[in-house]
Length: 416
Image 1: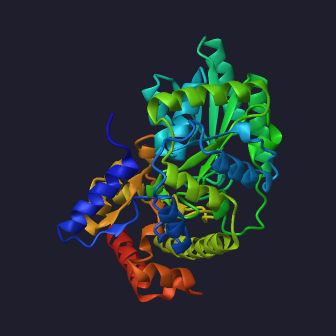
Image 2: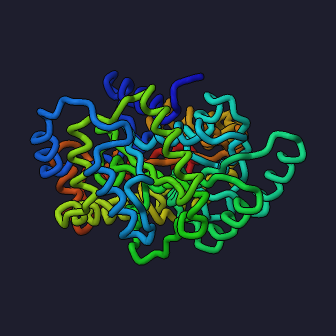
Image 3: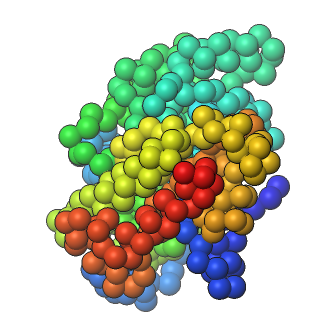
């Protein structure tokens, strides 16, 4: 199995920059912001804690995570919470503890299908409703689950992403309810990856977690890597379902954890426990980052729309998912582009724009789609703090220059 596409593009971008290329970094979905100083202080004060902790996580972290979910209409007991070194290993452990094939939205985050393949599980990619990424179309999921059961290889779980990576959109409550009804009929475990929940651009936007609809069959995962830019700290939490299924999953995930990662890093857990209590200083930082992500992602979407690509406006996080199908003939004639990977290759090698093709996210190779991550455009060092504090960050010289670079590259690609 090759290295994850998101990590690979990050390494390739870094190598090209080191070689002197001025690459526009739109491939890797890191939050692109500095760690808040008070989080740094919390970690430093906990640094002497060198002992192993409980496999499922420190009691203070599990209680803080339970409180985080309670404040979001998800009543949670400490026993439902399992912590891990990032939400990614927790997702893997949940899939490992859940039998059967895995249904995924198409497109969906690169690691879901890869983890299923590592577990030798069949993957069913189910297209999403138009403009509502992260959730399979309910009717198509119903058909896929029925067909898989008839074939003797039933689907056991379905993974949702709310809000979505790669599209930067959020599925509506009606679709979420319909998917939960399909899951109930087919006895599916719902795994809801909600790591971007706190980065919905407009906090007044309705958000329905499937755990509100199907509490006895839904696992929710989250972490601090996106909302507080702590990707390198590697800390995540999972909320298990209510009732016997949740008790079994919590025990099995903890058993897997005991043999794979033992326990998350003790000092990081202590700092994360404070973060999950949502002190005002950190909620203010998240609010500022949400506004910055919205402004820059919207400005990048503007550039793709002007170029003629089809793109749904991003409503969360720092992603968008343009479709260049309207230019299929032009791209084939001018650049010999006949697949999304060809398009990403031309943008990188001819125009110094790093992206990822939709095929990395489960799309058919011929689809001319790209996943664009906008969060590495905020600058370096103190520029990132300035961007966070700016009322109009897209006018900052270093961000405006990157937007101009993108516009010029798209113009060159399409001769506009």
